[in-house]
Image (cartoon, rainbow, N blue to C red; front, side, top):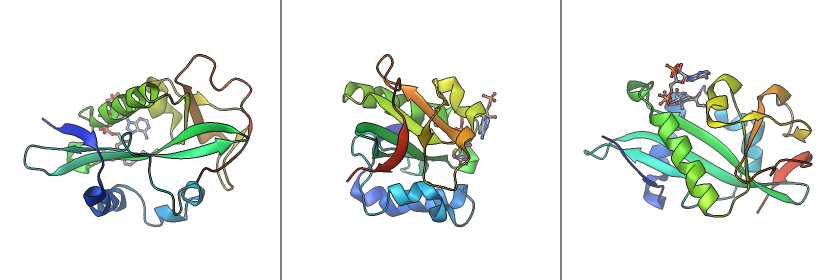
Length: 161
Ligand SMILES: CC(C)(COP(=O)(O)OP(=O)(O)OC[C@H]1O[C@@H](n2cnc3c(N)ncnc32)[C@H](O)[C@@H]1OP(=O)(O)O)[C@@H](O)C(=O)NCCC(=O)NCCS
């Protein structure tokens, strides 16, 4: 049984190590990281999952971004330790954090990722929302937290400090 709770300062390096384990080397060279440099993840929505012994099983982070003057959450990275994958933890982290985001008043969430995984959480391709290059536009996905939140939202995604 894993417990989900908001990430705290002391979790930072352990979460980084989990991401290093789960992603290909050089993950920080990805263009999405330029939107995160020197900006803290969104507190309260970025979550860690720990087992009763305190061992980290998974983590999810969110950053604030802007598309023109519209605020959005950038989901990711999300990762589950290889020994715990396929047991629903990734889904729990995503669903719980999206629920918290909606309750906190956020209207829209985007990410760069695999549509076959994220469509089960309501994500679909965002037309006209441009991540910093090089990003495959087919991997730019979004979900509404309030009805129609992505309607008419287009343009370049920029940092929100
Ligand atoms: C992606 C990840 C977070 C999913 O976590 P998880 O706890 O294993 O996921 P869940 O148990 O909730 O869901 C498992 C399901 O997702 C599917 N899935 C996992 N990754 C997928 C992907 N990239 N594309 C399509 N389906 C995927 C599995 O096949 C499984 O399908 P099933 O339900 O039909 O059996 C985890 O596999 C991981 O950390 N991967 C490495 C890091 C990564 O790729 N992060 C996402 C960046 S886009």
